[in-house]
Amino acid sequence: MDIIVIGTGYVGLVTGVCLAEMGNRVTCVDRNPEKIQALEKGLLPIYEPGLGEMMQRNMASKNLFFTTNLTGTMNSPCLCFIAVGTPPRTNGAADIRQVMSVADDIARHMKAPVLVVNKTTAPVGTCDAIIRQIRMGLAARNKTITFDVASNPEFLKEGDAVADFMRPDRIIIGLSQQKAAAIPEIQSQEILSRLYAPFSRNHHKIIFMGMRDAEMTKYAANCMLATKISFMNEMASICENVGADVERVRRGMGADSRIGYDFIYAGCGYGGSCFPKDIQALIRAAEDMGITPDILKAVEKRNFTQKKRLFEKALAFFGGNLSGRHFAIWGLAFKPGTDDMREAPSLSLIQSLMEAGASLVAYDPVAMDTAKAILPSSWLASGRMAMAEHQYAALQGVDALFLVTEWKPFRQPDFAAMKRLMKQPVIFDGRNQFDPEELAKKGFDYKGIGRGRMD
Ligand code: NAD
Image (cartoon, rainbow, N blue to C red; front, side, top):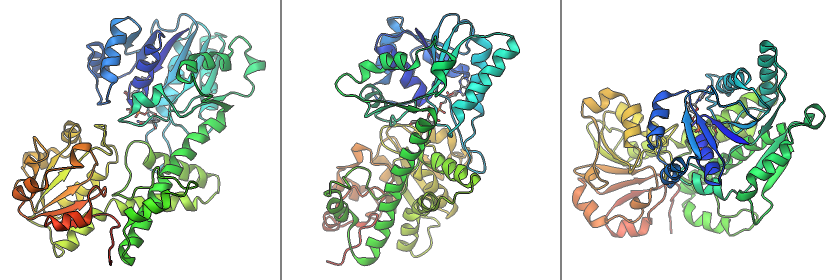
């Protein structure tokens, strides 16, 4: 079966390239012609380690193709992945219009049986809506062509996306309950088992369930991860006030096998295209059903507060006035390994510092072009905000450094060189990368997150 992947963002492009890598013939479709033009030339529109070489290799071996629309791609039976966006509406609910427009496109172009697989994170019930939309589209064309819809939420992490797709922890597949009776021609479970077998060779990683179970699993998983982060951030605030160091507390907590070490780092808040929007979407969905999502609301509120912590620390340190101060920012991306700045904590910090009258120079190994595209151009044009060529160049004459994204080159910097370059040796560390005692010995004023100390 030929494979079509609709949407060539972080999820769609990685899906298309990795499926092609396993020998499938894949056509990636995106409505953005500039993206498709770049991809056809072998150029990646996003930064994702390892993806570019794999993509070029599969283009050269004629396994991977790109196009701006579905015309001519659905003449024979195919598997059609949906990987478009579900941005938040102003009330927080997930906007599924991109998904519905793709369902409509599929109905208009399909000429043979199709198994539609939804990878997009979308509210419970979206796959049912896709089924209705395709039925309506086919009815409008006066056609009866068999199709099935499955939910297959994606769990890859930007920065590790290729490795995550090639060696996933688990593959969740939600199948439509009535499928077997309604359309026996499409053996969805068998098709998807075979497709994913090479990604799951040594372990039974494929978990089949109902469509709604799969849709809910994705939201529940992201909300759990965000909860762990907000929980630790709350512990960090308490640590600061009781004279405990959250890094030591984290090590002590993680040693309990029921808790574990993963995802219990305190910091300056979570960002990205998934956690903030998925939490909001589940809160909205719960409230619409008359459920009060107390925990989810607290998780979101804590994250909102947490994104302001570095700014508050700087304000306190500099006596309540940051006007005329000059600061360096290390890290713009919402996490290391990506150029994605959607909902990044750096954005909230930059906004607050600019409003307080400071000037800034930022450095990020890959996200500076993204920053230039999304920050107000007047900030850059006026010179109050600049990008540095190198992490050390950002430090020239600054009153303090903010470490916002824990890229590897920031982890063991040359502290002596830093001290020589900075006007004042002050570090606000939003990712607890450094040891407060060591930094104090080196003569730095160091403020991390949750590093209260009385001993
Ligand atoms: P993205 O915004 O990077 O990419 C979406 C792409 O879809 C864009 O290139 C857009 O042009 C294209 N598109 C939109 N409508 C289209 C249409 N009608 N036809 C063709 N192309 C269309 O999004 P993303 O980060 O890849 O995320 C996609 C989905 O996967 C979201 O629901 C997200 O929550 C989920 N997800 C994302 C990640 C992640 O790390 N980014 C991880 C897991 C799940």
